[in-house]
Length: 226
Image 1 (cartoon, rainbow, N blue to C red):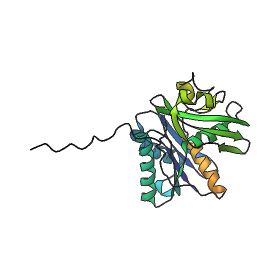
Image 2 (cartoon, rainbow, N blue to C red; image 1 turned 120 degrees about the horizontal axis):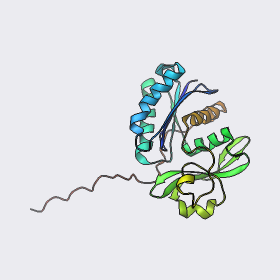
Image 3 (tube, rainbow, N blue to C red; image 1 turned 90 degrees about the vertical axis):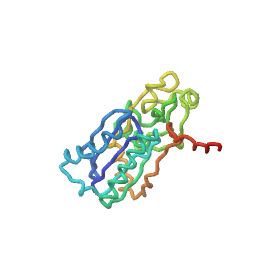
Image 4 (spheres, rainbow, N blue to C red; image 1 turned 180 degrees about the vertical axis):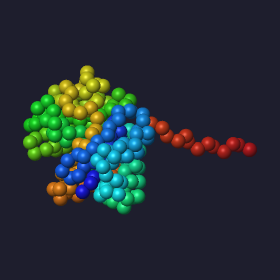
C-alpha cells in the first residue's frame, strides 16, 4: 500500500506518503491563507523525497475538517482529483481525530490515560472542537465535532488539556496546551492505515463545514421598474 494523505483544514497545508507501516515522507507549510499555493508542490515534494511516482499511489486519504470553507475545500478537491486521475479510492478522516492521534503517537505531555480537547481556529473568536479520551490503545472521540465561541465552552472543558491553536488563541477560556498546533498529514495517514489494517471501512471524503462560508454570492437584483 502507498497512501497519499492531504489535509488543509487548519493553518497547515500538509501532505504525506505512508506505506502501511511508516511515514515515508511529509511536507508541511503553515500559511492560513495560502492553501491553494502549496498542495500540489507538496505532493510533488513527498513523491520525490520517497523516490516514488504518482502511479505508485494506491489510495488517497484527506482530512475532512471541520475547517474554514475555502481552505478545507482545496484539500478535498485536490484529493478527489488525484484519486480520479489515478483510478484509486479516496477516503476521508476527521482532521480533529488526526490531531488527537498525533498526541497519542507522541504521548504529548503524558497524554495517556486522560481526557482532552482538540480545538482549532474557526476564526470569528470561535473554535472547531471535540472531546477525546487517550489511552494506551489509542484515541476515542467522545463528542461530535462542533463550532462555538471559545468563551461559550469554557465551563464545559475547564481543566482539560487542549490540542490545537485554540489553546494559544484563547488561553483565557481554554485549558493548558498539549500536543500539535495543526494537523500533520503523517498522523492522518498513520491513523487511516491503522483503521484499514484493522478491517474498518473508511468513510467517503465529505467535508465538515459546520457553518456557512464567510463569502457568499450577492442576492439577485430585482428587475428595474418600467
